[in-house]
Length: 437
Ligand code: SAM
Ligand code: SF4
Image 1 (cartoon, rainbow, N blue to C red):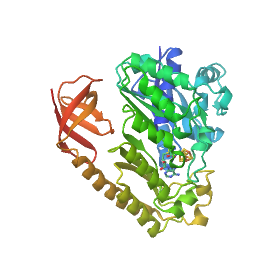
Image 2: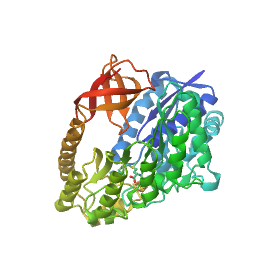
Image 3: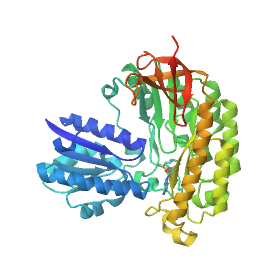
Image 4: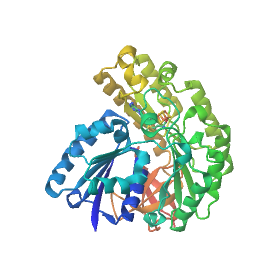
């Protein structure tokens, strides 16, 4: 039996794509291996969202080249860099055998056949348009033993945020028909999965036969599913219907990831985000009214071209007034073909040291807020969906609250159980406590 080694970079969408690649390879009698030295086939599933992710790909490729030299392994690059660079990647890395985009995962058998039998290098990066696109169905057996799983509900993105490469690498939005989503969730529940996260770049514009709010309500009805989550939503089309779903259905977990990107209207306009800070805060207030206590997380970019200290101060002020539970903040990275990448100089590139210093200030402010919110949980008894033993201490159990807060605790509840945990300590990232019998 041949063995494959898969290295995944980037977002949840890539993690999910890698699982599908594994399933396609299993059908070709490939077995996974954890060590690239044993592999006959090495696949890198790449990410293009920031320059750093691309640099990581290039340095990893250098390492795998040595394996190729020692045992003639094939090397393929999939994902967003592959989609963007196409033939250029083959020129840059002459030892790469094939390059394939996110829409070509189903074509892996044919690509491998051509590489092996015809001894040619292959580039397969066509987008599949809406009518023809077939979402790969997850094999439920690969999820046996897992408590929580991701389910793809759409691909691509029709927005044009000026900093973002995703519309160029993942193409137009295509929604997965709701019946397929529901069938996959039911399959996952039948092998023990208790929580699903519906994923897409902008789930709010889901159009798979019913609205996204209706989809969430239906997924929540699937027997044995305890919690439903989703990511990501764009604030400009966060509907009242979706907010109302939080009132209606307790199984929709009280956590909302709502990327704001900046606290300055001037910057938001250049980012082409289509909302103002006031509009964002109005949506946030409506959400918090619909489900008091809901945890809200966000994404922020600092050092966007032309961002002044005053703009940045507005982002800091928003971070404090919105009191996000957490945020993923990034330094702006100019991306090929994007409006902000092309106009960086014209709008005013921000020096790297200014970007780094702003990021540090922002993250410090967020750490303090996260620390305060987590400290407020101490003394509470929280319901925790147990995922298994703790990474840090195998003698302890690990799970998450409905708000998606990590909890390490003393107890014996099995994976998949809902445990009641008395919270005794906190840090900005996790809670610790004891299970109540
Ligand atoms: N679709 C999601 C949305 O609109 O919120 C975002 C998807 S993107 C994979 C995740 C995050 O990466 C974005 O929210 C943004 O903060 C960040 N990001 C995207 N392009 C970036 C760039 N050129 N430089 C820095 N961060 C970027
Ligand atoms: Fe990128 Fe904007 Fe689409 Fe998100 S909504 S994937 S940031 S273009």
